[in-house]
Image (tube, rainbow, N blue to C red; front, side):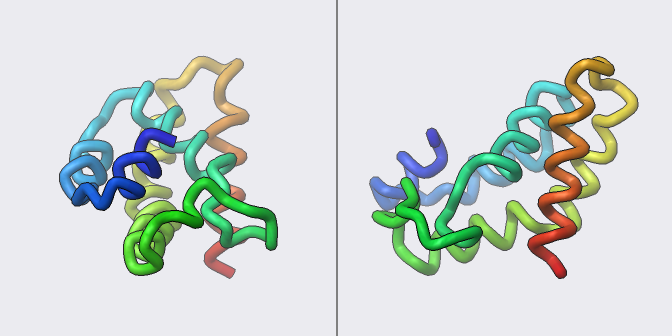
Length: 102
Protein backbone atom coordinates (compact mmCIF):
# COMPACT_ATOMS: atom_id res chain seq x y z
CA UNK A 1 0.00 0.00 0.00
CA UNK A 2 2.90 2.39 0.61
CA UNK A 3 3.82 2.26 -3.06
CA UNK A 4 0.24 3.02 -4.06
CA UNK A 5 0.21 5.96 -1.65
CA UNK A 6 3.27 7.47 -3.28
CA UNK A 7 1.87 6.87 -6.75
CA UNK A 8 -1.44 8.46 -5.75
CA UNK A 9 0.50 11.58 -4.78
CA UNK A 10 2.09 11.54 -8.25
CA UNK A 11 5.52 10.87 -6.76
CA UNK A 12 7.96 9.31 -9.23
CA UNK A 13 8.22 5.78 -7.84
CA UNK A 14 11.00 4.66 -10.17
CA UNK A 15 13.66 5.00 -7.46
CA UNK A 16 11.61 2.92 -5.02
CA UNK A 17 11.07 0.19 -7.60
CA UNK A 18 14.79 0.16 -8.38
CA UNK A 19 15.75 0.04 -4.69
CA UNK A 20 13.29 -2.81 -4.09
CA UNK A 21 14.58 -4.67 -7.17
CA UNK A 22 18.21 -4.33 -6.10
CA UNK A 23 17.63 -5.55 -2.56
CA UNK A 24 18.84 -9.08 -1.90
CA UNK A 25 17.29 -9.35 1.55
CA UNK A 26 14.78 -12.03 2.43
CA UNK A 27 12.54 -9.32 3.90
CA UNK A 28 12.42 -7.50 0.57
CA UNK A 29 11.59 -10.74 -1.24
CA UNK A 30 8.84 -11.55 1.27
CA UNK A 31 7.30 -8.09 0.86
CA UNK A 32 7.57 -8.43 -2.90
CA UNK A 33 5.86 -11.82 -2.74
CA UNK A 34 3.06 -10.32 -0.67
CA UNK A 35 2.69 -7.46 -3.16
CA UNK A 36 2.55 -9.89 -6.09
CA UNK A 37 0.02 -12.16 -4.41
CA UNK A 38 -2.26 -9.88 -2.47
CA UNK A 39 -2.11 -6.27 -3.67
CA UNK A 40 -5.02 -5.98 -6.08
CA UNK A 41 -4.19 -3.39 -8.69
CA UNK A 42 -7.56 -3.91 -10.31
CA UNK A 43 -6.19 -6.34 -12.88
CA UNK A 44 -7.43 -9.58 -11.34
CA UNK A 45 -11.15 -8.86 -11.16
CA UNK A 46 -13.69 -6.07 -11.30
CA UNK A 47 -13.50 -5.11 -7.63
CA UNK A 48 -12.45 -1.59 -6.60
CA UNK A 49 -8.75 -1.18 -5.99
CA UNK A 50 -6.53 1.13 -3.96
CA UNK A 51 -4.82 1.74 -7.26
CA UNK A 52 -7.91 3.19 -8.97
CA UNK A 53 -6.79 6.73 -8.07
CA UNK A 54 -3.38 6.23 -9.67
CA UNK A 55 -2.70 7.34 -13.22
CA UNK A 56 -3.27 4.50 -15.70
CA UNK A 57 0.27 4.80 -17.08
CA UNK A 58 1.80 4.47 -13.61
CA UNK A 59 -0.44 1.47 -12.86
CA UNK A 60 0.73 -0.21 -16.06
CA UNK A 61 4.40 0.43 -15.22
CA UNK A 62 3.99 -1.05 -11.74
CA UNK A 63 1.92 -4.01 -12.95
CA UNK A 64 4.52 -4.85 -15.60
CA UNK A 65 7.30 -4.53 -13.02
CA UNK A 66 5.36 -6.69 -10.56
CA UNK A 67 4.74 -9.44 -13.13
CA UNK A 68 8.17 -9.37 -14.74
CA UNK A 69 10.76 -12.12 -15.09
CA UNK A 70 13.04 -10.01 -12.87
CA UNK A 71 10.48 -10.16 -10.07
CA UNK A 72 10.20 -13.91 -10.53
CA UNK A 73 14.00 -14.24 -10.40
CA UNK A 74 14.22 -12.09 -7.27
CA UNK A 75 11.66 -14.26 -5.48
CA UNK A 76 13.29 -17.49 -6.69
CA UNK A 77 16.69 -16.30 -5.46
CA UNK A 78 15.31 -15.84 -1.95
CA UNK A 79 13.71 -19.30 -1.81
CA UNK A 80 16.74 -21.17 -0.37
CA UNK A 81 17.17 -18.53 2.35
CA UNK A 82 13.58 -18.23 3.53
CA UNK A 83 12.29 -20.05 6.59
CA UNK A 84 10.40 -23.21 5.64
CA UNK A 85 7.27 -21.84 7.32
CA UNK A 86 7.33 -18.82 4.99
CA UNK A 87 8.09 -20.61 1.73
CA UNK A 88 4.37 -20.78 0.90
CA UNK A 89 4.33 -17.00 0.39
CA UNK A 90 7.08 -17.16 -2.23
CA UNK A 91 5.48 -20.17 -3.91
CA UNK A 92 2.12 -18.38 -4.05
CA UNK A 93 3.75 -15.35 -5.64
CA UNK A 94 5.51 -17.45 -8.27
CA UNK A 95 2.23 -19.16 -9.17
CA UNK A 96 0.52 -15.77 -9.39
CA UNK A 97 3.18 -14.40 -11.74
CA UNK A 98 2.88 -17.47 -13.97
CA UNK A 99 -0.90 -17.12 -14.03
CA UNK A 100 -0.76 -13.41 -14.92
CA UNK A 101 1.74 -14.02 -17.70
CA UNK A 102 -0.28 -16.75 -19.40
